[in-house]
Length: 304
Image 1 (cartoon, rainbow, N blue to C red):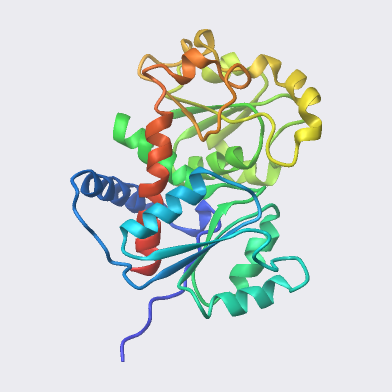
Image 2: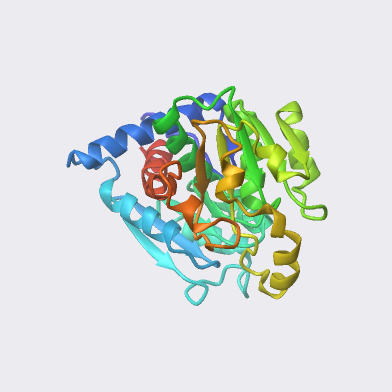
């Protein structure tokens, strides 16, 4: 009898080594080329992915569901109405039961502690589809997108403009794991978690002036100013972030070869202007597609 594959989870970028992460990015590009060429690749035939959504989503659901189908497996969507996660039944009991019936679990939820508890009691790999703390699957897609257009991101300079939110946290982790310099421009009071900033050491710098952050940057990234659950803060946040809108004048301060990324959905005229979002140096549509291919590489790695 052969030894079974060690159980691995993907809850944040630090769960994998830099070599593993770069391998996933390269494999995602291979899988993308195979898909575009019409080549069938079904290593996960007979495998089932359970997708638990406590936060709604378009890209996360479609990318995981379509990706799993392309790999020969199947995926089931579980809304808050369909599960007892954190509501009545303890999370650890849900994990114990569900992981006896499926081969992998993807969770998109609010509290990061919930997914950590689930993973602790799960018998199968658990993937973070987004928590309030971080969004590691999106970073796989972002790194794939930059690499496809400009080559390795190691040694480059990235500017994050906006809220110090879960996406910002994942960019800080990516700076450490993919070896690039990150300038985070955010208003006072909206900084990322200082413990997460400390993880990146000298690779991450917090600045207040978004123009200075973007100067000569190779990649400029932003996100919505108002995340799910923050709707009541809309007016206050829009006032605080008024000077952090990525417009053409700001992006023109970046390096001539710079790219623009946004994980979407984007609110045109708020965190980014329409002319930036739709320009040639904006690769957000490739970025959105690459969620599927990067996650296929991740599923193949965890289950193959």
